[in-house]
Image (cartoon, rainbow over all chains, first blue to last red):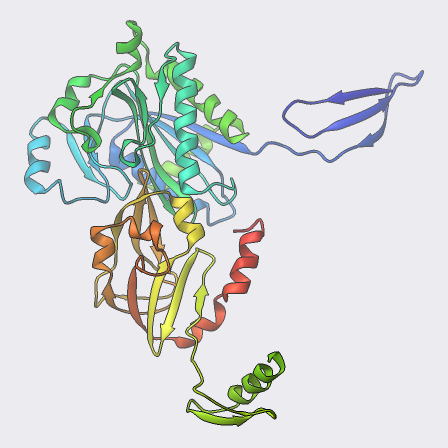
Length: 264
Length: 161
């Protein structure tokens, strides 16, 4: 008798080896397969285009084509704000646009932040009900996935904060990753922004996330060597899969084209 | 005493809303029937409590716990009209903006400005001071499709919540 145990699945097969080459399966317990997390590395795209892709992916959750997808991008320089719009009137928007950046008002949580080249922006479009997660636990999960990623590159002193306005991932007094999400009918949108080799001077023109006196940092700045978005992205996907108990699966070129056609 | 109260309740259930003198078999009891405005619940963890045609809406204890500390409430304005399950606002907690849904169709008559100033009331007192908005129901029958307290408690125990 020979018993096999697979890590990660609840599968146990008892195989009786006989004199003939083909083993006979005596019993087979219930197999629990890991759900998939589809990942789509879409390169450098404008903020509004990425948001349109998110909307199409989110809408698909209400149909037969429902899939949990994580969209990975970089953006040309852009400042974005969340649903708390009062601190950012029109003249503030104009001031930031004059710096050469785009500006967008969004429906996510969180205050003002910056996205730009060298920053890995990840948008998980997932079904919280299917994953058995509340909004708070989902945000914690994002923080954990980012911390795993940072530790992989040797940044061990990552931490989160218990203060409700300090959500994100921190290294000492500096923020390395901002988080701001939206949930509608259990489907998430928006996500996280992890500084790999971002030009951090863009942050000097704002109070990032509304937190006065706090700094911003990046993996490159902390490690003293260039760390790129391309290096970090697969590590982040793996970290998400570890936290969600999912298996990563590439969003095929055909699937990408199908979505991109819808946003033309 | 229990038998008396059972007899009284059955008689009251059949009675119009007016003080009554009821002979329980042991002694006369005068009682004014109380109309309980019980809360009804949705599967999105919102509650509605109706008084006449005006419904007060909030989120449940389960919802406020799942959200975490609420830092901002985006509430619908008086005069706005919604159909059942329309998205009508949002609550922000831990950098997450979660949509609010209108549990029944109607026209907003007021919003809780105290909650706009102190969003933490939603966590501390989700059924009392942390109410979100009131509306005039346009389709009272929609209440029949919502869960009562016992059904909601049962719903929370299932995997589907």
